[in-house]
Image (cartoon, rainbow, N blue to C red; front, top):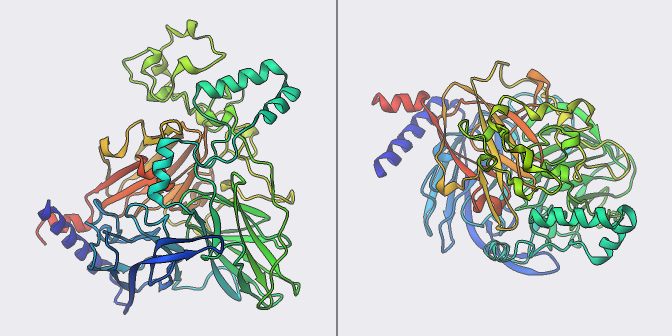
Amino acid sequence: MKTNYLKGVLAGALAMVALSTGSRAATYDLTVDYVTIDTGESKTKGIGYNGASPGPTLRFKEGEEVVINVTNNLKESTSIHWHGLILPYQMDGVPGISFPGIEPGETFTYRIPVKQSGTYWFHSHSGFQEPDGAYGSIIIEPEKREPFKFDREYVVVLKDKHPHSGDRILRNLKMMPDYYNRKQRTIGDFFDDVSKNGLGATLSERGDWGEMRMMRTDIEDVQGFVGLINGMSPEQNWTGLFTPEERVRLRFINASAMTYFDIRIPGLEMTVVQADGNNVQPVKVDEFRIAVAETYDVIVQPKDDKAYPILAESMGRSGYAFATLAPREGMRAEMPELRTDSPLLTMADMGMAHGDMGHGDMAGMDHGAAPADSGSQDAMPGMDHSNMPGMDHSNMAGMDHSNMAGMDHSAMGMADKADPFYAAGSGLIPAAANGGKFLSYGDLKAQKPLYAERPATREIELRLTGNMERYSWSINGVKYEDADPIRLKYGERVRFKFVNETMMTHPMHLHGLWSILDTGQGKWNPVKHTISINPGTTVYSETEVDEPGEWAFHCHLSYHMATGMFRKVIVEGGPAITQLENGN
């Protein structure tokens, strides 16, 4: 094992020599420390960098080599993962995959050849240190001029700070999965449903959800947090200054443990210019949803001499973050009206809206995953037919589901859907508060293709599985500790098929390799590092396998990753590996 690790370090060193541009190396020093996080409502112990949470904003330049010395002042092992950066895998910062971790009192030196530009972030990949405050931001300046203009910029880092530690939150979720659900339906809601839909339909609907051991309010696992922007609560009011008529670039980063945010700046139109660090063709929006771990860069141009609010409401409407754009210090924008109607999941979100099948609406009926030698309904992973009320299973005994493997359910009904990345009839489909334009993945087009368009060499299906009842999450029904690695070959192009069989939304993050999100736009498909997969949907992405080594691939919701929705990816071959194997 030690020999393999030393080989890996040598491979990484060879890769860095090969990739070095000869530019000077910029050096940074980071310490990992215990800190106190003060939200104005509470003070909690956490973990930060250089004595603070969030940590500093690191500024790199495309083409240089960055040296980062990280000293661990904790009483426990730590690590730093450079989220979205393309780098030698030994520098990726994932204990047990990329390197052993950084022990107490030790200093580890990261050496990163910077091959990209844009907005990124860094965080611990050890335990629940990231939810407990170990995160910071990265700005990489491009070698060439940006394809858009701006006069000033701000990093806007979102965080869902909870008074409970990460360890305590997971213990509570394991003990009682709805422990943090403050939006549960009441007897009043029952009578409202009866008045709208009738007693029979209401009882049937409640029974359906009960038999599936789920609730329509299972949208956010963890509520009761304080939304932070750049480490400051709504009460503390982080403020970014501007001069009227200036073009202000806002670099949004969602560093939350579990929370999706819907972002708007009432009175200002936002022009989206980057997604996950990559330039996109500008699109004007009134609001956008940012998944956990995603980044979006937008440009706004305040014309009036007044304060504007930045409001980020959680997807489940259980909390929010707030900040101000202002022409002068000491100003606070007026709080916009919050949306109080919480979204509710529907049967479509469970892949059960068979009368109106859309982009993967049959995710829960993944017939193609059934063993080819079995025609019995018991052999269909991901679907318990006995728990599907209203279906007469008696006539299904002779039905060979395995013969449906060639049927692409995800393509059904896309033409008549407003947004193919949500199940038709989903309760999660967003809408702008002012009735205007809400950003969709389908709006994202690459400014300049990163890769030449070519067909994928093969497809790998990843079914996102698990449930709230047992609070256990997995891929293809297998948790990380029981799973074999995903093996890729250097130089191939792989198509990933994500099938979400759960009622939760999962932001899937592949380390070290770009994910080309299939939005049906060919060479203009956007390139991302994190892709959000909504309930009841099937989503495709492609990856050019151009970085050798071992990588992590996981849901970026902290407690989903921790309970099993995680895989190791091994890229076999490649220049550095070949050099090592040849003894060069």
